[in-house]
Length: 432
Image (cartoon, rainbow, N blue to C red; front, side):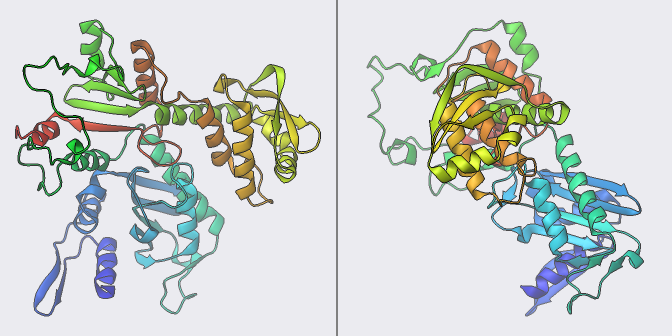
Protein backbone atom coordinates (compact mmCIF):
# COMPACT_ATOMS: atom_id res chain seq x y z
CA UNK A 1 0.00 0.00 0.00
CA UNK A 2 2.85 2.38 0.84
CA UNK A 3 4.50 1.65 -2.52
CA UNK A 4 1.18 2.19 -4.30
CA UNK A 5 0.72 5.56 -2.58
CA UNK A 6 4.22 6.65 -3.65
CA UNK A 7 3.58 5.68 -7.26
CA UNK A 8 0.19 7.42 -7.29
CA UNK A 9 1.71 10.66 -6.01
CA UNK A 10 4.49 10.50 -8.61
CA UNK A 11 1.91 9.81 -11.28
CA UNK A 12 -0.12 12.85 -10.23
CA UNK A 13 2.97 15.03 -10.50
CA UNK A 14 3.85 13.72 -13.98
CA UNK A 15 0.74 13.02 -16.08
CA UNK A 16 2.99 12.99 -19.17
CA UNK A 17 4.65 9.76 -17.97
CA UNK A 18 3.08 6.29 -18.10
CA UNK A 19 3.19 4.25 -14.88
CA UNK A 20 2.69 0.53 -14.33
CA UNK A 21 2.78 -1.18 -10.92
CA UNK A 22 2.84 -4.97 -10.62
CA UNK A 23 2.76 -7.11 -7.50
CA UNK A 24 3.01 -10.92 -7.35
CA UNK A 25 2.52 -11.18 -11.08
CA UNK A 26 -0.63 -9.02 -11.04
CA UNK A 27 -0.83 -5.50 -12.46
CA UNK A 28 -2.44 -3.27 -9.82
CA UNK A 29 -1.96 0.07 -11.54
CA UNK A 30 -1.67 0.92 -15.21
CA UNK A 31 -1.71 4.60 -16.19
CA UNK A 32 -1.18 5.79 -19.75
CA UNK A 33 0.73 9.00 -20.50
CA UNK A 34 -1.69 11.92 -20.79
CA UNK A 35 0.30 15.11 -21.40
CA UNK A 36 1.10 18.14 -19.24
CA UNK A 37 -1.81 20.55 -19.71
CA UNK A 38 -4.64 20.96 -17.18
CA UNK A 39 -6.98 18.62 -19.07
CA UNK A 40 -4.31 15.91 -18.96
CA UNK A 41 -3.76 16.53 -15.26
CA UNK A 42 -7.48 16.22 -14.53
CA UNK A 43 -7.65 13.02 -16.59
CA UNK A 44 -4.77 11.57 -14.52
CA UNK A 45 -6.52 12.60 -11.28
CA UNK A 46 -9.69 10.98 -12.61
CA UNK A 47 -7.75 7.71 -13.09
CA UNK A 48 -6.32 7.81 -9.57
CA UNK A 49 -8.91 9.55 -7.39
CA UNK A 50 -12.00 8.42 -9.29
CA UNK A 51 -14.62 9.96 -11.53
CA UNK A 52 -16.46 11.52 -8.59
CA UNK A 53 -13.50 13.75 -7.82
CA UNK A 54 -13.20 14.90 -11.42
CA UNK A 55 -16.93 15.69 -11.53
CA UNK A 56 -16.97 17.55 -8.23
CA UNK A 57 -13.80 19.62 -8.35
CA UNK A 58 -12.92 23.13 -9.48
CA UNK A 59 -9.79 24.24 -11.30
CA UNK A 60 -7.29 26.33 -9.35
CA UNK A 61 -4.78 28.62 -11.08
CA UNK A 62 -3.37 31.70 -9.33
CA UNK A 63 0.04 33.39 -9.36
CA UNK A 64 1.60 36.03 -7.13
CA UNK A 65 5.15 37.37 -6.92
CA UNK A 66 6.68 34.45 -8.79
CA UNK A 67 4.73 31.75 -6.92
CA UNK A 68 2.05 29.82 -8.80
CA UNK A 69 -0.52 27.38 -7.46
CA UNK A 70 -2.50 25.16 -9.84
CA UNK A 71 -4.54 21.99 -9.57
CA UNK A 72 -8.04 20.91 -8.66
CA UNK A 73 -9.99 21.21 -5.40
CA UNK A 74 -13.17 19.41 -4.39
CA UNK A 75 -16.43 21.23 -3.73
CA UNK A 76 -17.16 21.65 -0.01
CA UNK A 77 -20.06 19.17 -0.23
CA UNK A 78 -17.61 16.57 -1.59
CA UNK A 79 -15.88 16.23 1.78
CA UNK A 80 -14.03 13.39 3.49
CA UNK A 81 -13.51 12.08 7.01
CA UNK A 82 -9.73 12.69 6.97
CA UNK A 83 -7.15 14.76 5.09
CA UNK A 84 -5.55 11.73 3.42
CA UNK A 85 -7.26 12.75 0.17
CA UNK A 86 -5.23 15.96 0.05
CA UNK A 87 -2.28 15.72 -2.33
CA UNK A 88 0.22 18.58 -2.26
CA UNK A 89 3.25 19.11 -4.48
CA UNK A 90 6.06 21.66 -4.48
CA UNK A 91 8.02 21.98 -7.73
CA UNK A 92 6.73 18.54 -8.71
CA UNK A 93 7.76 16.92 -5.41
CA UNK A 94 5.02 15.24 -3.31
CA UNK A 95 5.08 16.73 0.22
CA UNK A 96 3.11 16.52 3.46
CA UNK A 97 3.72 20.02 4.71
CA UNK A 98 2.00 21.49 7.79
CA UNK A 99 1.95 25.00 6.34
CA UNK A 100 0.20 23.83 3.17
CA UNK A 101 -2.31 21.66 5.01
CA UNK A 102 -2.98 24.57 7.38
CA UNK A 103 -3.63 26.86 4.41
CA UNK A 104 -6.12 24.36 2.97
CA UNK A 105 -7.89 24.07 6.31
CA UNK A 106 -8.09 27.86 6.59
CA UNK A 107 -9.51 28.25 3.09
CA UNK A 108 -12.30 25.72 3.73
CA UNK A 109 -12.99 26.73 7.34
CA UNK A 110 -15.91 28.84 6.14
CA UNK A 111 -17.62 25.87 4.50
CA UNK A 112 -16.93 22.68 6.44
CA UNK A 113 -17.54 21.31 9.91
CA UNK A 114 -14.36 20.91 11.94
CA UNK A 115 -14.26 17.12 11.50
CA UNK A 116 -14.65 17.14 7.70
CA UNK A 117 -11.90 17.64 5.13
CA UNK A 118 -11.77 18.58 1.44
CA UNK A 119 -10.24 16.43 -1.28
CA UNK A 120 -7.76 18.17 -3.58
CA UNK A 121 -4.52 18.03 -5.53
CA UNK A 122 -2.53 21.29 -5.51
CA UNK A 123 0.77 22.03 -7.24
CA UNK A 124 2.93 24.90 -5.99
CA UNK A 125 5.71 26.07 -8.32
CA UNK A 126 8.32 28.68 -7.43
CA UNK A 127 12.00 29.52 -7.72
CA UNK A 128 13.92 26.51 -6.22
CA UNK A 129 16.18 28.97 -4.38
CA UNK A 130 13.14 30.20 -2.40
CA UNK A 131 12.31 26.83 -0.86
CA UNK A 132 14.44 24.51 1.27
CA UNK A 133 13.67 20.83 0.53
CA UNK A 134 16.20 19.41 2.99
CA UNK A 135 14.44 20.06 6.31
CA UNK A 136 13.05 16.52 6.60
CA UNK A 137 14.94 13.18 6.32
CA UNK A 138 12.39 11.85 3.82
CA UNK A 139 12.06 15.28 2.15
CA UNK A 140 8.35 15.18 2.98
CA UNK A 141 8.37 18.71 4.37
CA UNK A 142 9.75 21.96 2.98
CA UNK A 143 10.55 25.43 4.28
CA UNK A 144 9.63 28.48 2.24
CA UNK A 145 11.62 31.69 2.24
CA UNK A 146 8.30 33.59 2.42
CA UNK A 147 5.76 31.26 4.07
CA UNK A 148 3.20 34.07 4.44
CA UNK A 149 3.15 34.65 0.69
CA UNK A 150 2.63 30.95 -0.08
CA UNK A 151 -0.06 30.49 2.56
CA UNK A 152 -1.91 33.62 1.48
CA UNK A 153 -1.75 32.60 -2.17
CA UNK A 154 -3.20 29.13 -1.47
CA UNK A 155 -6.00 30.49 0.75
CA UNK A 156 -6.84 33.20 -1.79
CA UNK A 157 -6.73 30.82 -4.76
CA UNK A 158 -9.00 28.26 -3.09
CA UNK A 159 -11.51 30.85 -1.91
CA UNK A 160 -11.56 32.49 -5.35
CA UNK A 161 -12.18 29.11 -6.98
CA UNK A 162 -14.94 28.24 -4.51
CA UNK A 163 -16.59 31.62 -5.07
CA UNK A 164 -16.59 31.00 -8.83
CA UNK A 165 -18.28 27.65 -8.23
CA UNK A 166 -21.41 29.63 -7.29
CA UNK A 167 -24.24 27.48 -5.94
CA UNK A 168 -22.82 24.14 -7.19
CA UNK A 169 -23.27 21.18 -4.88
CA UNK A 170 -21.62 17.78 -5.18
CA UNK A 171 -23.24 15.34 -7.63
CA UNK A 172 -22.52 12.58 -5.12
CA UNK A 173 -25.35 13.87 -2.90
CA UNK A 174 -27.83 12.79 -5.58
CA UNK A 175 -26.14 9.40 -5.89
CA UNK A 176 -26.29 8.97 -2.13
CA UNK A 177 -29.98 9.91 -2.09
CA UNK A 178 -30.79 7.43 -4.86
CA UNK A 179 -28.77 4.75 -3.10
CA UNK A 180 -30.71 5.28 0.13
CA UNK A 181 -33.99 5.00 -1.81
CA UNK A 182 -33.17 1.56 -3.16
CA UNK A 183 -34.16 -1.57 -1.25
CA UNK A 184 -31.42 -3.40 0.60
CA UNK A 185 -29.56 -5.73 -1.71
CA UNK A 186 -30.88 -4.06 -4.87
CA UNK A 187 -27.81 -3.88 -7.16
CA UNK A 188 -27.33 -0.49 -8.82
CA UNK A 189 -31.03 0.24 -9.18
CA UNK A 190 -31.30 -1.40 -12.61
CA UNK A 191 -34.37 -3.43 -11.67
CA UNK A 192 -37.77 -1.93 -10.82
CA UNK A 193 -38.62 -1.38 -7.16
CA UNK A 194 -40.36 -4.46 -5.79
CA UNK A 195 -43.91 -3.99 -4.51
CA UNK A 196 -43.31 -5.91 -1.30
CA UNK A 197 -43.95 -5.16 2.34
CA UNK A 198 -40.37 -6.16 3.13
CA UNK A 199 -39.00 -3.02 1.47
CA UNK A 200 -37.27 -0.85 4.12
CA UNK A 201 -39.64 2.11 3.76
CA UNK A 202 -42.80 0.01 4.25
CA UNK A 203 -41.86 -1.99 7.32
CA UNK A 204 -43.45 0.47 9.75
CA UNK A 205 -46.02 2.07 7.47
CA UNK A 206 -49.78 1.69 7.65
CA UNK A 207 -51.36 -1.12 5.57
CA UNK A 208 -51.92 -0.19 1.95
CA UNK A 209 -55.55 0.51 1.08
CA UNK A 210 -57.10 -1.74 -1.52
CA UNK A 211 -58.19 -0.35 -4.88
CA UNK A 212 -61.80 -0.12 -3.74
CA UNK A 213 -61.08 1.95 -0.64
CA UNK A 214 -61.34 5.73 -0.63
CA UNK A 215 -57.59 6.25 -0.36
CA UNK A 216 -56.13 9.60 -1.39
CA UNK A 217 -52.95 9.00 -3.36
CA UNK A 218 -52.23 12.63 -4.29
CA UNK A 219 -49.29 13.78 -2.20
CA UNK A 220 -50.49 17.38 -2.23
CA UNK A 221 -53.70 16.37 -0.43
CA UNK A 222 -51.71 15.52 2.69
CA UNK A 223 -51.54 18.19 5.42
CA UNK A 224 -47.72 18.05 5.35
CA UNK A 225 -47.52 19.15 1.71
CA UNK A 226 -48.32 22.55 0.25
CA UNK A 227 -48.81 23.28 -3.43
CA UNK A 228 -49.79 26.48 -5.20
CA UNK A 229 -51.00 26.74 -8.75
CA UNK A 230 -48.72 28.97 -10.82
CA UNK A 231 -49.05 30.39 -14.30
CA UNK A 232 -47.78 27.82 -16.83
CA UNK A 233 -45.60 30.44 -18.54
CA UNK A 234 -43.88 31.30 -15.24
CA UNK A 235 -43.11 27.63 -14.59
CA UNK A 236 -41.93 27.10 -18.16
CA UNK A 237 -39.48 30.01 -17.93
CA UNK A 238 -38.17 29.24 -14.44
CA UNK A 239 -37.61 25.52 -15.02
CA UNK A 240 -34.75 26.38 -17.40
CA UNK A 241 -32.90 28.18 -14.58
CA UNK A 242 -30.31 26.16 -12.62
CA UNK A 243 -32.57 25.45 -9.62
CA UNK A 244 -35.81 25.38 -11.58
CA UNK A 245 -39.34 26.44 -10.67
CA UNK A 246 -40.78 25.83 -7.20
CA UNK A 247 -43.67 23.36 -7.41
CA UNK A 248 -44.41 22.43 -3.80
CA UNK A 249 -43.32 22.64 -0.19
CA UNK A 250 -43.22 19.35 1.71
CA UNK A 251 -43.47 19.10 5.52
CA UNK A 252 -42.98 22.89 5.61
CA UNK A 253 -39.25 22.08 5.35
CA UNK A 254 -38.35 21.06 1.81
CA UNK A 255 -39.00 22.89 -1.45
CA UNK A 256 -39.51 20.65 -4.48
CA UNK A 257 -38.68 22.28 -7.81
CA UNK A 258 -38.97 21.24 -11.44
CA UNK A 259 -36.03 21.72 -13.81
CA UNK A 260 -35.83 21.13 -17.55
CA UNK A 261 -34.41 17.62 -17.00
CA UNK A 262 -35.24 16.61 -13.44
CA UNK A 263 -36.19 17.79 -9.96
CA UNK A 264 -34.40 19.59 -7.13
CA UNK A 265 -35.15 19.20 -3.41
CA UNK A 266 -34.06 22.19 -1.31
CA UNK A 267 -33.65 22.29 2.47
CA UNK A 268 -35.16 25.74 3.08
CA UNK A 269 -33.50 26.32 6.47
CA UNK A 270 -30.02 25.26 5.40
CA UNK A 271 -30.23 27.27 2.18
CA UNK A 272 -31.47 30.47 3.80
CA UNK A 273 -28.93 30.11 6.61
CA UNK A 274 -26.15 30.27 4.02
CA UNK A 275 -27.70 33.28 2.30
CA UNK A 276 -28.01 35.21 5.57
CA UNK A 277 -24.44 34.30 6.45
CA UNK A 278 -23.10 35.63 3.14
CA UNK A 279 -25.14 38.84 3.60
CA UNK A 280 -23.64 39.31 7.07
CA UNK A 281 -20.10 38.92 5.75
CA UNK A 282 -20.78 41.45 2.97
CA UNK A 283 -22.31 43.96 5.37
CA UNK A 284 -19.44 43.59 7.81
CA UNK A 285 -16.84 44.07 5.07
CA UNK A 286 -18.64 47.15 3.75
CA UNK A 287 -19.57 49.21 6.79
CA UNK A 288 -20.57 46.97 9.65
CA UNK A 289 -23.85 45.19 10.28
CA UNK A 290 -26.81 47.49 10.88
CA UNK A 291 -28.37 47.05 14.32
CA UNK A 292 -32.08 46.92 15.05
CA UNK A 293 -32.92 48.37 18.48
CA UNK A 294 -35.35 46.42 20.67
CA UNK A 295 -38.27 48.40 22.11
CA UNK A 296 -37.75 46.59 25.41
CA UNK A 297 -34.28 45.18 26.20
CA UNK A 298 -34.29 41.39 26.61
CA UNK A 299 -32.60 40.06 29.74
CA UNK A 300 -30.63 36.85 29.28
CA UNK A 301 -29.67 34.79 32.35
CA UNK A 302 -26.25 33.09 32.08
CA UNK A 303 -23.77 31.62 34.50
CA UNK A 304 -21.17 34.14 35.68
CA UNK A 305 -18.33 32.82 33.52
CA UNK A 306 -20.45 32.85 30.38
CA UNK A 307 -21.72 36.36 31.08
CA UNK A 308 -18.16 37.65 31.60
CA UNK A 309 -17.01 35.92 28.43
CA UNK A 310 -19.77 37.50 26.32
CA UNK A 311 -19.42 40.97 27.85
CA UNK A 312 -15.64 40.90 27.28
CA UNK A 313 -16.43 40.79 23.55
CA UNK A 314 -19.24 43.37 23.66
CA UNK A 315 -17.42 45.88 21.43
CA UNK A 316 -16.77 43.29 18.73
CA UNK A 317 -20.32 41.94 18.94
CA UNK A 318 -21.56 45.52 18.55
CA UNK A 319 -19.83 45.64 15.13
CA UNK A 320 -21.86 42.56 14.22
CA UNK A 321 -25.10 44.37 15.15
CA UNK A 322 -25.57 42.73 18.56
CA UNK A 323 -25.63 45.30 21.39
CA UNK A 324 -25.16 43.90 24.91
CA UNK A 325 -24.52 45.33 28.36
CA UNK A 326 -24.21 43.96 31.87
CA UNK A 327 -27.40 43.50 33.88
CA UNK A 328 -26.50 42.44 37.37
CA UNK A 329 -24.61 39.29 38.26
CA UNK A 330 -24.66 36.54 35.62
CA UNK A 331 -27.01 38.32 33.23
CA UNK A 332 -26.81 40.53 30.15
CA UNK A 333 -29.29 42.90 28.56
CA UNK A 334 -29.75 42.68 24.78
CA UNK A 335 -30.51 46.18 23.44
CA UNK A 336 -30.20 45.53 19.68
CA UNK A 337 -29.88 42.62 17.27
CA UNK A 338 -28.58 42.47 13.66
CA UNK A 339 -31.27 44.00 11.42
CA UNK A 340 -30.84 41.49 8.60
CA UNK A 341 -31.76 38.64 10.95
CA UNK A 342 -35.26 40.05 11.41
CA UNK A 343 -37.06 38.85 14.54
CA UNK A 344 -34.84 36.48 16.52
CA UNK A 345 -34.91 34.68 19.83
CA UNK A 346 -32.29 36.86 21.54
CA UNK A 347 -31.97 34.55 24.55
CA UNK A 348 -31.13 31.50 22.45
CA UNK A 349 -28.81 33.56 20.26
CA UNK A 350 -26.77 34.91 23.19
CA UNK A 351 -26.57 31.50 24.87
CA UNK A 352 -25.37 29.86 21.66
CA UNK A 353 -22.77 32.60 21.20
CA UNK A 354 -21.61 32.09 24.80
CA UNK A 355 -21.07 28.40 24.02
CA UNK A 356 -19.12 29.32 20.87
CA UNK A 357 -16.92 31.76 22.75
CA UNK A 358 -16.15 29.09 25.35
CA UNK A 359 -14.53 27.02 22.59
CA UNK A 360 -12.44 29.88 21.15
CA UNK A 361 -8.86 30.57 22.07
CA UNK A 362 -9.06 33.56 24.41
CA UNK A 363 -6.36 35.33 22.35
CA UNK A 364 -8.44 35.26 19.17
CA UNK A 365 -10.75 38.08 18.22
CA UNK A 366 -14.24 37.56 16.91
CA UNK A 367 -13.18 38.85 13.52
CA UNK A 368 -10.61 36.07 13.34
CA UNK A 369 -13.37 33.60 14.17
CA UNK A 370 -15.93 35.36 12.00
CA UNK A 371 -17.26 32.17 10.48
CA UNK A 372 -18.33 30.70 13.84
CA UNK A 373 -19.96 33.89 15.12
CA UNK A 374 -21.73 34.81 11.89
CA UNK A 375 -22.76 31.19 11.35
CA UNK A 376 -24.41 31.09 14.76
CA UNK A 377 -26.21 34.37 14.11
CA UNK A 378 -27.26 33.32 10.59
CA UNK A 379 -28.78 30.10 11.93
CA UNK A 380 -31.03 32.14 14.21
CA UNK A 381 -32.06 34.52 11.43
CA UNK A 382 -32.87 32.02 8.69
CA UNK A 383 -36.19 30.60 7.53
CA UNK A 384 -36.97 27.81 9.95
CA UNK A 385 -38.12 24.34 9.08
CA UNK A 386 -41.84 24.28 9.72
CA UNK A 387 -42.57 27.68 8.19
CA UNK A 388 -44.95 27.63 5.25
CA UNK A 389 -43.75 29.56 2.20
CA UNK A 390 -45.83 30.73 -0.74
CA UNK A 391 -44.76 30.26 -4.37
CA UNK A 392 -43.26 33.74 -4.63
CA UNK A 393 -41.17 33.24 -1.48
CA UNK A 394 -39.94 29.84 -2.63
CA UNK A 395 -38.93 31.11 -6.06
CA UNK A 396 -37.27 34.18 -4.54
CA UNK A 397 -35.18 31.88 -2.35
CA UNK A 398 -34.16 29.81 -5.39
CA UNK A 399 -33.14 32.88 -7.41
CA UNK A 400 -31.12 34.25 -4.48
CA UNK A 401 -29.35 30.89 -4.13
CA UNK A 402 -28.39 30.99 -7.81
CA UNK A 403 -26.90 34.46 -7.37
CA UNK A 404 -25.00 33.73 -4.13
CA UNK A 405 -21.58 32.03 -4.00
CA UNK A 406 -21.27 28.95 -1.78
CA UNK A 407 -25.06 28.50 -1.51
CA UNK A 408 -24.71 24.83 -2.46
CA UNK A 409 -23.78 24.02 1.12
CA UNK A 410 -24.86 25.31 4.50
CA UNK A 411 -22.41 26.78 7.02
CA UNK A 412 -21.53 23.28 8.22
CA UNK A 413 -20.71 21.72 4.85
CA UNK A 414 -24.00 19.90 4.38
CA UNK A 415 -25.70 20.22 0.98
CA UNK A 416 -28.55 22.72 0.76
CA UNK A 417 -30.14 20.89 -2.16
CA UNK A 418 -30.16 17.57 -3.99
CA UNK A 419 -30.67 17.44 -7.75
CA UNK A 420 -32.09 14.30 -9.35
CA UNK A 421 -31.98 13.99 -13.11
CA UNK A 422 -35.03 12.53 -14.84
CA UNK A 423 -32.96 9.61 -16.18
CA UNK A 424 -31.91 8.75 -12.60
CA UNK A 425 -35.52 8.80 -11.41
CA UNK A 426 -36.56 6.65 -14.37
CA UNK A 427 -33.77 4.19 -13.52
CA UNK A 428 -34.97 4.12 -9.92
CA UNK A 429 -38.40 3.01 -11.11
CA UNK A 430 -37.04 0.53 -13.63
CA UNK A 431 -37.96 2.61 -16.67
CA UNK A 432 -34.37 2.43 -17.93
